[in-house]
Picture (cartoon, rainbow, N blue to C red):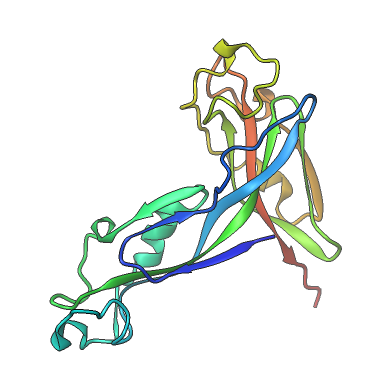
Length: 210
């Protein structure tokens, strides 16, 4: 299920991962972990007198129609597709209302992430009358434990091998179900001599026929 979160804090870490990377048992090639961030709404500024107002002078919270126009784009670019993302005022280069004490309000969802070991197939599927919408996909390796069963340690050492790909979206978006192989022949090889895996975050959306 998609998890919904809202934060009203000035500085905040958006987080979806609660239990670390998934554990793979013998011969298990596909798993779903706690998800990745998909930012829905962002406000950087002030739209009420009460939030983050404790100890502030009246003139510092007087404005209630202050918001940075491209705040949502900035936060989405920084956080979407990640399991954790740190936010604070320094990511915004523009001050939408000088001399006003501002806050960052973010609403986001945690979208379940499918993890598939190399040479196995990722199976994406939705309920009847729903279609796949891929949020993001990566083929590579970002840790030493995922898809590590019976693998040489030398094949797991490179954990900086992240290669975002649009190929899953191109093949699966708009379909009710879809399978794609987690292989270098499909995605290219971002790190030679490393055993890789495919990570896919997707949602199921209603299919309307008019």
